[in-house]
Amino acid sequence: MKAAAFNYQRANSIQEVIQLLGKYGDNAKLMAGGQSLLPSLNMRLSNPEILIDLQSIAELKGITQIDQVVRVGAMTTHTEIENSPIIQQHLPILSEAVPHIAHRAIRNLGTWGGSCVYGDPAAEWPACAIALDGVMVIQGAQGERRVLAKDFFLDLYTTALEPNEILVATEFNLSTATNKHYFEELSRRHGDYAATGIVCQVELKQDVVIDSRIVYFSVASTPLMALGVQESLNGKNIQSLISPEFLSSAIQMAKSEIATLADLTNSAQMKTHLVGVLLERALKHIAHQ
Ligand SMILES: Cc1cc2nc3c(=O)[nH]c(=O)nc-3n(C[C@H](O)[C@H](O)[C@H](O)COP(=O)(O)OP(=O)(O)OC[C@H]3O[C@@H](n4cnc5c(N)ncnc54)[C@H](O)[C@@H]3O)c2cc1C
Image (cartoon, rainbow, N blue to C red; front, side, top):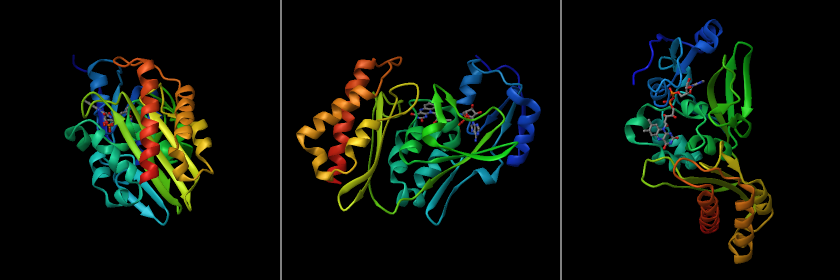
């Protein structure tokens, strides 16, 4: 099937985008890499009057570091994230996650912002943004507002972004504590969306956990944080996380607090099983890292 007819405009600044969104409202769609949007137009799941192309807006692109803050522009491609020395040094979870996103051709065009705003619960970036405590920088007619990543992903393909707003960037505050992390996803074939995935970030002070974030993706209608497990990690010596008793109770807790939903190919029961498998692998990896 082909998309219905639409108008097209290439915007040159964020301000121009906001003016166009004010003019066309719900009848406009922003286009980043087009990797999710264009298939949805072709399938007639969306029928906008006009596409506003973000490709020419330099201020939406690239990765910068200012002091302890790393900023990923919304129009930064998956491949640019993969190749960024700043990301490799400061946010290595993203470097490890990116090869799991689709295939090279899609990674060359698809963007950080497009993936976050699309809000696919099986996507890697929303879970990573939550695990790294990212802040979503949003611009609208009323100016800029900031939303914590954990509050941004509201439901299936639904975020806190209003129709007249644009996601400009995500900012990450770099912690000075010792960090350990783990990323893994299980899928049928490399490049497929995950059956279930996990992103963990643990902060330590002299081998004691002072903060942790454990986020699952492809388990429900949004990424989910294992809040109870996180709480149980805090204050523990890193080596005690892999005692058989602790592991067994943490796995039980994760399985009961992550309310899984079936997708087209995987049952909720299988996802719940994988929640436990991935947590065990994550804690063992982190303890030995
Ligand atoms: C075959 C295939 C396999 C894939 N596999 C994976 C995978 O394994 N993991 C994964 O995460 N993704 C996967 N994707 C999706 C891919 O990562 C896309 O790049 C991503 O979902 C959307 O990015 P985009 O830049 O192409 O956004 P677009 O498709 O251009 O836009 C997506 C949505 O976001 C909105 N939007 C885009 N940018 C902004 C912005 N700055 N502000 C406000 N709204 C905005 C658009 O209006 C649209 O509604 C796959 C895609 C394909 C086609």
